[in-house]
Image 1: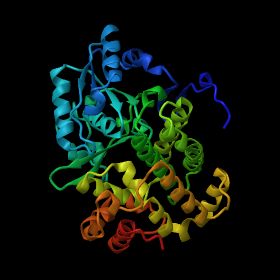
Image 2: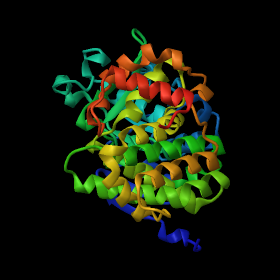
Image 3: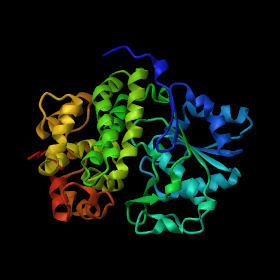
Length: 393
């Protein structure tokens, strides 16, 4: 692979939101906060990141610039409603006027939900992505948000949704409003340097699942499909390198781009991968990206008759040896093995006996209707059992 001049990996984009991309751009955090009118930000992250120097440095940089910043880090890997409630309390205690979403998908989702909820009188669950519930939001009460991703997977930094588990029924729910999308994103790939190989692999496969399901979703959206195709090419070229060498800034850069592209593309829709992984994660606390990675080839095999033309085009675009759906499935299987992703749900501790619990919730998931093959409980139960037991037929 050609040597990459890191100076060229830099840009300011407005697609779909304002993105400041490039190594070292975290230095612009105070400027980004000021651009949104913040004077006392709340920085939301997760407990693991809160122990690292990068979080202390970000808060200290802001404070030195005259923007006193405190850190809130009570965020679970699969965040729950209480995390949002506690974050709102921290926001008010600090007399904050803005939110910095700093971390992986969980922290970003909680941060966006906090920025939403600080000005609402209704409970969080009243803003689930159903019918026209987004119209209930008091937009004037929402706080501005700057997003700083530290993994390359969810793309939540450009998303309009937070995925939060409702503890009452252990169901992951999508909290939605168009204004939840952060106003400014700082995409600094150096923040992902040193990310453990396992987490790099899982988040990278999450990015692949977003691009892949968006590309396969039915409907006419050529812009989303074009973005998804290029996102998948970047993942094919750079994910193994990012997993192999945690200090490869070029690989980290291209994976960060691919992650953002996936979340931009999936406004077209997702599918059975996410419909299954949401309830699995809610009940078994599995990593979302890793769960998507495990179910991915089984969903592709299930959908194959409906997506063969698209798989043929994808195989050609990313340079697979053969141009057909089988080649794409083989590539996914080989990629998973190379980067250390488990082959079955059973390997994640989720057995086939749980199909009766997962399938009904998967059928109700907002991701299910845009699957290329229409889904129902029986089909999802079969898909779940296939993924649990390793049946690709």
